[in-house]
Length: 422
Image 1: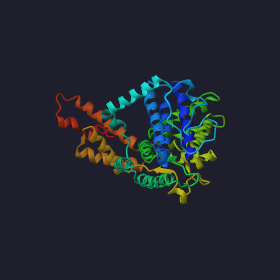
Image 2 (image 1 turned 90 degrees about the horizontal axis):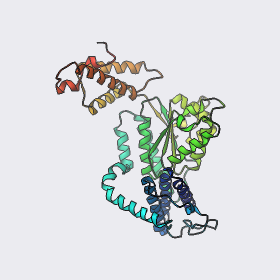
Image 3 (image 1 turned 45 degrees about the vertical axis):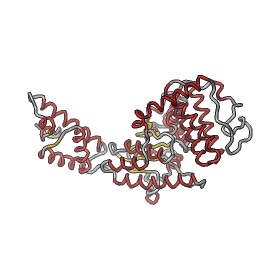
Image 4 (image 1 turned 90 degrees about the vertical axis):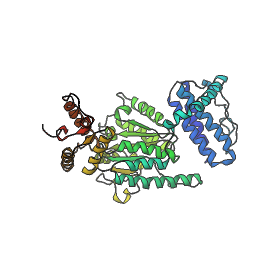
């Protein structure tokens, strides 16, 4: 296992060196991914801990330097004769551990690294609130604070338990279930919190050691598919490279498979499938969209179900017996009461209150909307739009008052609600 970890780290580091030499910002993420692997090796092999931690720190320094625009390795930094983490020349037989910390390519690199370390020390107090990752407990607490999503919360709690168990087994040197995948499918209507939960999953995966980063890179079809033959794979791969160490979140992913036989979306899917398998140790892909369309999407390529550990039956639906432990998380529509609570939450954040008549009218309206919801039902998104429209109408009413009181400016009345006539 040590060989695999170090080879993976060396490969990612060499990739980062090339990216940095080309002036690509993606090098920072690649250095972080390499550092993550070195730190895993340090935990697994205590006798080589200091060596691997030094390698990790070196990569982290370079990541910071790349982000600051102050460091790029020499073009010769990837020479095939350069000693690797095993302390051997490339091409010789490697062993478990050994070697000395990597040497800086030149004095300027060393100066940059020292400056970066000093800069981090000087600014840590200011940057920590923005960069400090969440613990699992903090991320789960944020999840619990979200309105509704009862079944989603329960599924994620179960899922976190499974991931924790797998990571413990890895740390103990035990094998995990063959083909286990951290990739997820989020199925549900718009406005049900899929993007918000994806961001929390990034934090959870980072805290559990699954990912070295934990950010969420949000993309759609236009970010992956090009207009000419041969360009889609390149464009998709660029997105994948930028997402290493993080969550790649693809909304409305089924649009990749709905363009016909000659559509380039299939090329994007094939490229994604390869990356999901080859980089499963430091890349998580979460795909999202309408429930029925997601089922159709999973059936378009045999590799999709296996990557997401989902069994789709002949009707295109997830087999019930596998649902509890599969990588599928279904987001149900918000109930009228949950939509009402979301509306009140918007009011509270913006210093508005409903008077009694407006409150009753809003409740009745949300019950009607829920009972008659169709395929375009937007859940929390519709509630947000409703709130904004209400505030706009109230502002127009306030503009007709010369000197409104604080109470008047805060209060939303029945005729401010956009679904009611004057």
